Structure formats: C-alpha cells, structure tokens
Length: 275
Ligand code: COA
Image 1 (cartoon, protein in one colour):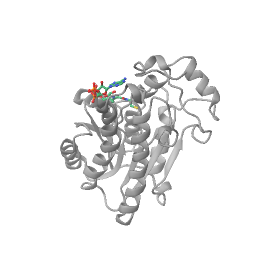
Image 2 (cartoon, rainbow, N blue to C red):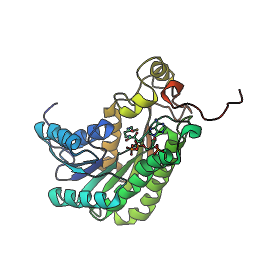
Image 3 (cartoon, protein in one colour):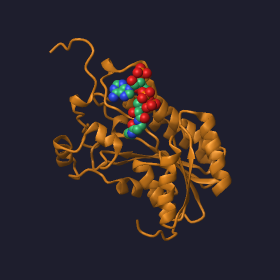
C-alpha cells in the first residue's frame, strides 16, 4: 500500500460500519489517506484489527470497534468509544450489509428478517447512534444503496425491500438533520469487483462477463470507483448536496439492468412452477 499523505480530511474522524472488509475497508483506507482518523465497526474484532493495522502501517490513524449493527446498544458503545478516541464524528459511512441469493418461496421469515435487520435497521441504528457524537454543524453521513433499491431483482426480495428503505432513511434524515448542518447522502454502487456480495450474486465467469459487456460503461466497478464517490460526497465540493442518492454503477440503473443471479447458487424452489 502506498504511504498516506494527509490531505482534505486531516483532523476529522470517520466511522465506517463494514469497514473491516470489502468496499467499506477500501473507503476507510481512502479516507485515512486523506488524513481522517478512521473508526472501523464490524462483527469481527480480529478482522477490524487486521484492516486497522494495514492503515496504520501505511501511516494512517485507525482502530477497530466490534459491534453488530443489528445491536443498537453495542453500536452506541462503539460510536461512543470512537468519539472518545478520535474526536467527534465528521464522517459516517453506513457500509455494513448482508446478502445471499434466495427465491422468496425458499426463504424463511428469519432469512428475510436477517437482511432487513443488517441493511435497513443497521443503517438506522448507525445514524441514530452516531447522531449523539456528530460534528454539528459539519458532519456528512453516507449510506450505501444498491440497484435493488430501484430495480426489482429475482432472488433479491429481502435486499430490494431493505435497500429501498435505506434510500428513504437517507432522504428523510437529510430533511431532519439538514438544519443542524448535517448532510445525509447515499451512494448506489452497481456491480463491484472483488467483493463478497458480487461473488455471491454473479461469481467470476460468463454471467459476470456478459453483464460487464452490457453495461453502458462496459466494465464492472472497482472498489476505488465507489470510494471516490464517497470522498466527493464528504468533501467541501459537495457542501450543498444533501438527500441525494448518487449512482456509481456504470449506467446500470439508468439502463434498467438487473444482475441475473445464476439459479444454481440458490436453494431449491418450494412449490411447483406453472411452466
Ligand atoms: N438462502 C436462504 N436462506 C439463507 C441463506 C441462503 N443462501 N443463507 C442464510 N439463510 C437463512 C438461514 O437459514 C437463517 O434462517 P433460518 O433461521 O430460518 O434457518 C437466516 O438466513 C439467518 O442466517 P444466519 O446464518 O443465522 O444469519 P447471520 O446473521 O449469521 O448471517 C447473513 C447473515 C445470512 C446475511 C449472512 O449471509 C452474512 O453474514 N452475510 C454478511 C456478508 C455478506 O453478505 N456480504 C455481502 C454484502 S452485499
């Protein structure tokens, strides 16, 4: 990893749920590269510690605070500890998410609830717990949406419902917290390479290659594409933007495209199809 040079977020604190892996980890690295002290929140302390060590080794400031975003009290403790260690939160990224492909007919009520609890309740819990520790005015909250928020997808009823709700939390909090000087926006990543979510929905191979060829920008996103959008939203360049859900999806949602999840990755259908 390159040595970090403190830049636009010097002196700020960023809290990132899901910061121990995937897109959240990359966003944390990029915010640290810009000078932010980053508080990584996730379920596994060892995974958070490993991600934090990578940032520290590159010259950044980071620490891990274990909490499951479904557990408000644990999250409240984590946000409080992050505030105490690094100072009031100037940036909050709600990145924790869960997903698996499953037809509604083969999904238990608890399976549906698991994703609603991680994505939707987890986003509310993060914003609510962080509210007590935000820089006011000045803080920027970024939520993570998905194409499923605006595009129905087979085997994704749980994620479609959760992410549509995430977008409405984003827009509602923008209304409620704008007068306090807190901006709340969302990023809508499309298909992103080297992520657990994408590997579950469209593993590397022909399905993913066909998707990339059909996207208006003709490629899958990198994690840095998503981090760039988050950095923009948290920067002064976006100081008059709130309540926006910015697609960073290569044109996927504009084209009305859905990821075609291969059926072999899902549990079998319950009931008899009519055709
Ligand atoms: N198809 C159908 N149901 C599934 C499933 C699948 N592929 N995977 C899990 N479930 C069900 C389980 O059977 C369980 O339901 P049950 O109690 O009725 O049996 C329910 O979902 C919860 O599973 P569990 O493994 O106990 O939940 P968890 O809290 O440990 O994990 C998940 C949450 C299910 C979302 C898990 O996939 C996860 O931890 N994901 C995090 C990583 C991730 O998804 N990253 C991609 C982000 S986009």
